[in-house]
Image (cartoon, rainbow, N blue to C red):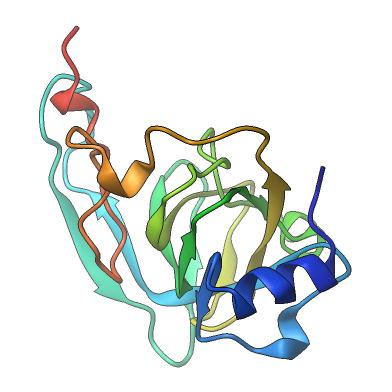
Length: 178
């Protein structure tokens, strides 16, 4: 079941969902619009190795915007910090963003109950497009969870993305055993 606007507001009031900054005008019928933060990152190496820690370079989006190019993976971040304590958050791109040829995530659209952080975006584009810090980039949709939760993400010892940061976070695949 997807939470309605009234259920999202109730969950915010009860601190089951946290969105900072919260802007009521960003609340949709059954979602909340999030915005592109000021930081982007790109990988330093041309070949990304799943078994090693791949370094990234962070940079700020200037006021005049930044042009994204096809063939490059950009890591972005939401302007909003979020916490979700009893529902499953899904991050989807806005249709207006998709119509510009921008994908905001390759595979990681679902968060976990207990995720408390900014969202890293896996941005790719079909053609050159200029983006701006603060532009609407996606929408959070919350799904109700059935049953009790034993393993909240923010309490997992092996959670790879618990460190609070307002910058995009590179892949931590290298921490897995394979």
